[in-house]
Length: 289
Image (cartoon, rainbow, N blue to C red; front, top):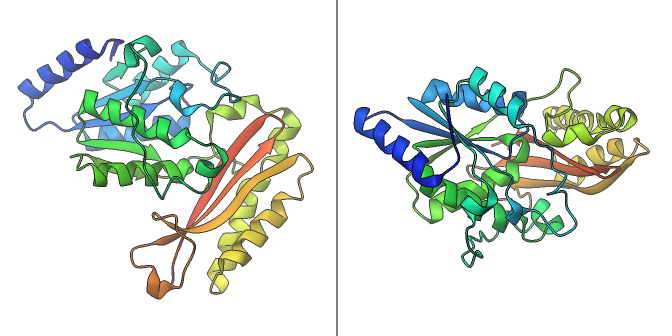
């Protein structure tokens, strides 16, 4: 595994790989570091489907709001590199902010529609920052496939929309959410939780499973799904709900009848604060035809 911090150096290594392996597929896993099993699973999947796996580690300031946790976002470079190598990364791109944004950024990628609900409503400008940095990384790496975890389903929808709209020749590969044994979705922010917050945070996955059980027994409605999940989350005294919503996926439009929802699924998505820590989770359900 090689580690590079400069864009020119990374491009040089990728060009050399393409010259030597003309038909070799390049897989790409963009991250903000503090790697865990969720990231490792993306790297392993990329390794199965690619000749060369590139991992980026960059905490992107553009996607953090003024009162969010950019400065205290967890970082552990030594552990990240150990996880990356064990999971099969071939090249790790670790730029600093000056490398990615050497001058004030005057160009922003903004994706409409899919960014206007869920985290997009709660965190104005967040997905502009995500789309901008991912677009930059795609142009730098020029991968054949890019791998994203479904824990942030809205992010997947945003990136898929951007790739379609801008005719980027990249296949986006959504990968299943990875969880702890007790059901808590893996997240770099879990490290912020106190012992009691961590225990109570299980209401997120539990509520989603209750919704899945309900949907398996009857024709689900958005209101019923939201009531089931929100009702269970409210049993945790420390939980402060940002949103609980049921929408069509990947359009993120309001949930409609199956006749109006070709190629769509149901996304039940939650964002909940425990103390200062904001957690997200979701569940994808089929729409009955």
